Image (cartoon, rainbow, N blue to C red; front, side, top):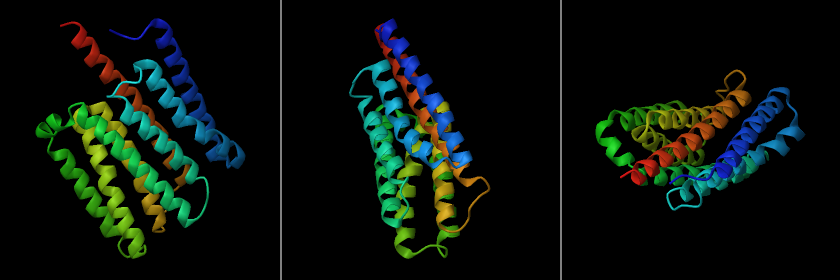
Length: 227
């Protein structure tokens, strides 16, 4: 059983609004339009959450992702403010986001996929270790510990996504790339067009994760309904 045509239409409108908002946000970042950035960024994750709820309804399987998007919105707002305290707050909020996503992926069968793709978490673990090696003498010990803990949750989420579905795994990889660039920046390793690259990979990641997860849930419901 699927959502009504009206619900599907509303979901498409919300997804289109996210795409438009993402373009506005990326333009604001590229052009350094601070006011536009502050106005548009906090709206994006609520749009994705609304899309997910309208498309699928408030089901138990969907709620961890919706909660994760709420924490991501909080993280987006925290990172709009400069300062160590707000950076730490943003990191904590996004760590909860990754944990929520991981719960949703595990509930959807990521553990079964892990048995077939054990190389995925191994590669992410190697990437995590490489990041720590690069950063160990570039940041303070407390920040290194925070990055270590955050990396565990981030790369676990990305591994769970990849073990569940290849497209979902792409979203997890994009999220990992975005957050890794932020981590490198804290150690003085700032890539060209850093802010734009971070935001582009982040918005793509969230979009891919949410839309693909919605598709997987819909496919599972259709298969169940056809039995």
